[in-house]
Length: 540
View 1: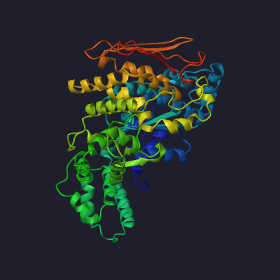
View 2 (view 1 turned 120 degrees about the vertical axis):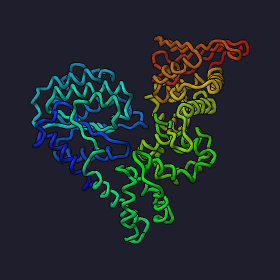
View 3 (view 1 turned 60 degrees about the horizontal axis):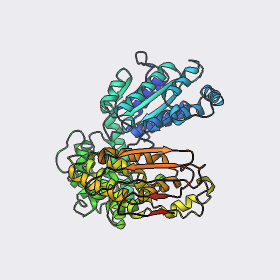
View 4 (view 1 turned 45 degrees about the vertical axis):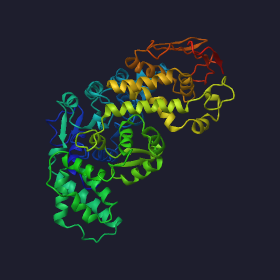
C-alpha cells in the first residue's frame, strides 16, 4: 500500500545500487527479509517489484504458495528465473540462445542448477550496464528444508558469480533458511521501527473503506477503539485485513468490533488465532462443516471448487457455497483457478491444524480420508472409453474436440481423484485407517478400474502420474509393481499378495496402435483377471 514500508523500500534500493550506508553490507549474497506470518511480507515483495520496475531493474519474481502445485515446487524456481532473465537481459538471452542452437532438445531436469549456473558463468562479470534484481517471495512455502537448502546454494553461488545480478528473498525465519543465509544482508520486519506507523496507516485506510461500504457515520470509530485494534494486531497486517473483512458481514460493525476486542491483548499469533476462532464459532457445530475444512486444508496439490469439495467431503453442494460465502474473511474464490476455494492466508490453514482450533484438523487423518474418498470417486465414476472416442487409433493430438469431451465426461472430482489419490494415502495411517484403506484399494484393484484409470490418464495427457501413484501405495499393501513399455505392447502389471480375502490380480493394457504410446492415444483395453471366480476375458 502506498505510504507504508517506505523505510525498508529505501533500504532495498540503497542495497541494490550500493548506495550510502551499504559499505559494510555484503553485496555478493541475497538480501533476506523475514518475519512472522501475516506481517506483510508478500505485500512488501509486490511493492519491491513495483519499485524496481520503475527503475528498470526488475528482472522477474517467483511467488511461492504452499497450496499451489507449481508455486510450491522448488524445481520450478530456476527455470522461471532463467526465462525471466533471458527476457530482460540481452547478454543472458544471447548465451541462452547460443546454447539452444547447439542443443535443441532440453529435458526439464536439465533446466536445474548446473545449467543455470553455466549460463551465469558464461556472461562477463560486468557485461550488464545496470544491476538486475529477481525477487523470491515466501520461500518457506516451497518444498522442504533440504530442497530449500539446495536451491539457496545455487542462488548464493549465482550472486557471487554475477555482480550484475541481485536476489531478494522473503520468508519466515525457518531454521534451514537461517542457516543458509546466515552471512547475507537481512532485515527483520518484526523490528521495523516504522512498522507501527505503517500498520496504523494501513488500518486507517481499511476502516475508511469499511465506513464507506457499510455507510457508517464518519466518526463511528473512536480513537480509543482504534488504538485497541492496533494493540491487538500486534504488528500483523493480516489481523487488520481479516477483521475488516468479517466486520463487513456484521449487522452492527461497531458492536461486533467491541466483542472481538474483549479480553486482554496477547503476544505472537495468539490474537490472530482468537480472531479466527471467533469467526468460526457460529459454524463449528454444523455436520459436515469440518469435513469441508479438512478437504480445503489438504487440497494443497490443486485447489477445488464447490462441487469437488462437496463430493470429497460428502456434504451438499449448496452448504459448501453458503459456508464459503459466510466465511469470506477466511476463504475466497480464486477466479484465476476457475473459482476454486482457497484460504486467504497460510496462517489460516495452520490454525485449522493447530491445538488453538476448537476442532483441530488432524492432517494425517484428513489426508487418509481424502485418499479413500478419491478411491471411492474413481470406483463410482470410472468407466471404459470415458470420453466416448470413436477411434482409439487416433493420437490425442488428432482428436480436435478432446478438451470439450474431457470437460463433458470427466468431472472435476474424478480428475482430482485420479491425479492425487495416492499422494493423499501416503500419510502414515493407524491400524483402523489401514483397514479402511486396504478395503478401498481391494475394491479398486480387483475390478476393471485400474484399466479405466490408465485410459483416463491417457486422454488427460497425464500417463506419467501412473507409475509414481502405484509405487506410492507399496508400503501400504506391500505391492510389487512392475512396469514395462515395449515397442509393441504397453504392459502394466500390479501384483497384490494373497490375503484372507484378496486374490491375485493382473492387468494388461495393449495399445490398439502399437506405434502410439498411451500418453498420445487412449488405449483399448485387454483385461484378463486370473481368478477362479472370474473365468472370462473381456475385450473392448
